[in-house]
Length: 314
Image (cartoon, rainbow, N blue to C red; front, side, top):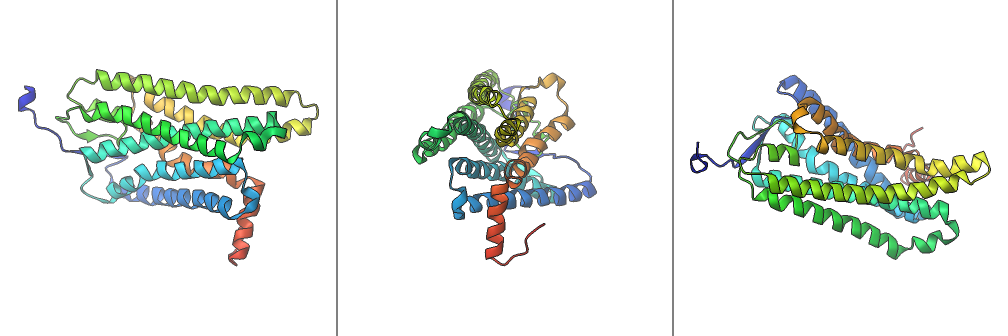
């Protein structure tokens, strides 16, 4: 069939995780609870940092922006996913799909560089504590956050523009719950060399730069910790970084697995599980891993609950 005789696809069908109505209802309830928990946990961190003077430090400033990026990242996909789980018409327009992919790349890339900024913050706090407040002043913190979102915007834009030039002639079924770049490229009836090349080069560049910044900070942190003579001092210094390392591991591990696994060996079920991990579960787990087990954050939240005369969880 010639290109001229091929119909142009105007919408995609999101097949999601299951076609079983009972499972769809179950998934809806599970992911609704997860999404509400994500919103509640991250909003709590942002509010606690804003109203509690004890949390007005560079570390918690960056942490509140990580919470904001988590909310954005989760909100890009989960509401549409919940809608399709209960709807008989599980479609999304081509423009809507590309827009969803743009904001997914934007929020994901921004989060990666916010994590790098948080690694630098820990480096400044542990390796040069006497100059910490001057090295991480308000201007520097604002610049780090603005830079993260600017890089995320450029990364999303350079990957969206080549994709918007592709033609989609069918099939139009996405065996996934969201519009991610590998899924969209696989459905195109145009040559995808430009899109594939731009994504590979940009993703490798972004990944190597952000990972190098994070790794460089932690190499210096580790060297400083090893020079601490007391075991208690080493444990205290390392404990301030352990949660961040877990979050970084989840972010890089699942993202690399999803986007850089060869398509020929792709498993739809496995890709779906990995995407659930970094799109849905990680934004929920970040405040739990990184913040809510932090004594200062717990104390700040408890003070706010006491002021509101709300029951305090044990």
